[in-house]
Image (cartoon, rainbow, N blue to C red; front, side, top):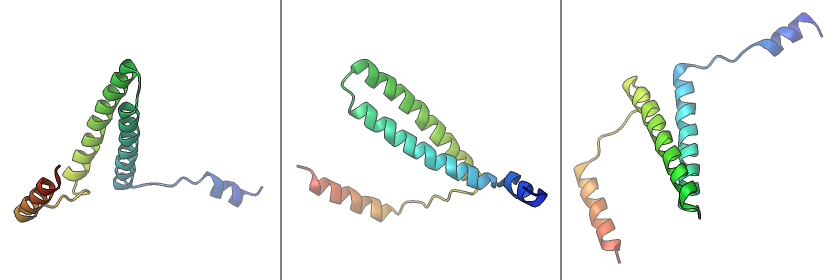
Length: 97
């Protein structure tokens, strides 16, 4: 192996903070979804409670990442339109059994 091959193999990929936080947020969403499924489909009450505690921790982590990204302007949240909210409420109310 020559020096050029060795150099190309040891080069690191440098990610921006925004990319790292975005990846962390996506990962937390997946982890939370998985723990949610585990807790919802668990036959043991003790194990279910353990999953719910972990899920609560994961929600806090996810919220922290979200707040950090939002404060840096990397996660834009659009204000909800009042008319769309009313329409969604009416739609959901009419679908109830």
